[in-house]
Image (tube, rainbow, N blue to C red; front, top):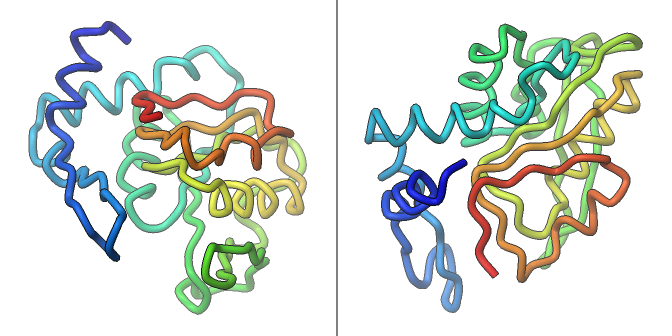
Length: 178
């Protein structure tokens, strides 16, 4: 991605101080999503590293990850697998719990969404502490898929989330905030 595109995408992301709690600066991507050219450039730049890689599915995480995951899947000619909060998927599921600063959370994926022979990437909008992404990776692997990599629009490097993905051979982030 060119520095000009990176600057444009960064200019389209709004910082919201003290959301969702005091001391946090939230990276609001709705301002990027409403800009057709910016959204298109973000999706293209997120998909580009995976062009030519033998993949079968894009595994994307609720909820903003769906926006990018679906668009990237379409760009690469692949299907998209949703990973959701408990009770949101209608079929039999696998679940993975992970720790947060303030407790635990759980994600679910249909047990037949991916399997042996599938090569997937995990897509989300943000890599922060890495718990959500690591849980999605675990779900895909427990189903038999090969997780080729992970892709994020934004990485908050100061939170160290990449370390929780140390066993993922390739992690791509468009915009990094230290």
